[in-house]
Image 1 (cartoon, rainbow, N blue to C red):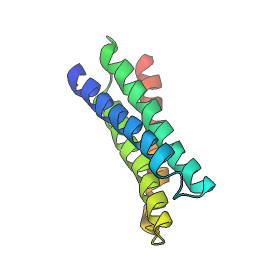
Image 2: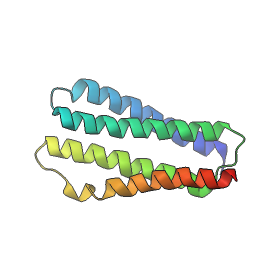
Image 3: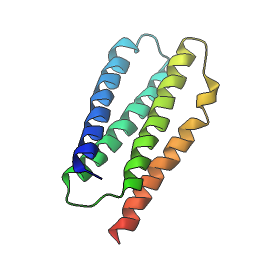
Image 4: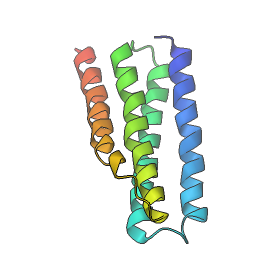
Length: 122
């Protein structure tokens, strides 16, 4: 996988994490309950953590597997973005419950990405 694609993906996720974090801290602070705000922040943190992992891998000479890249990328989308959808829809009184099972699938993909990195190290 080309390092430029990995770096660009990391940058997009990083940009969005900063925007969503600011949005949560300022615009949503008065709208969301403390629990909802905490959940939203968890989504932002995990998105940023994994954006940084992708960025480090993109700049390293380490050869990341395509599978690990996709696990991290899809994991961020399914985990963090499902949390955003759940929190925001709940705040509007129309919780999109179908997103609930998607969050742990995203989490499993993030774990799989880390596992693939571990395996490729050996």
